[in-house]
Image 1 (tube, rainbow, N blue to C red):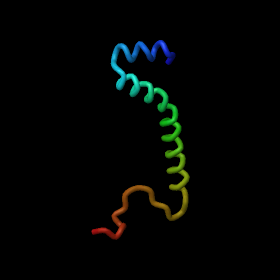
Image 2: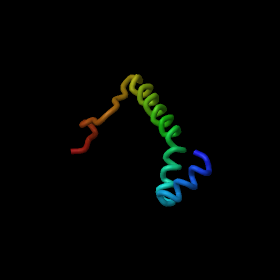
Image 3: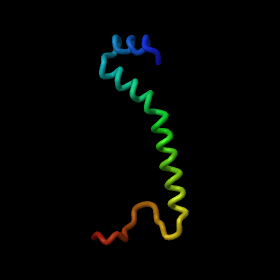
Length: 62
């Protein structure tokens, strides 16, 4: 997204929407990487003995 595209976006849809769109485009890659890392961590933790992933009714709360 070049500066001319950004200026056009502001002129057409307004500043708040333009900033939101810009941030979504910039953060998309980081969100994908974060999701991938969380999934890998979940897989690693779930292979450890004695670790249960998910909701458990055995938490001592009635």
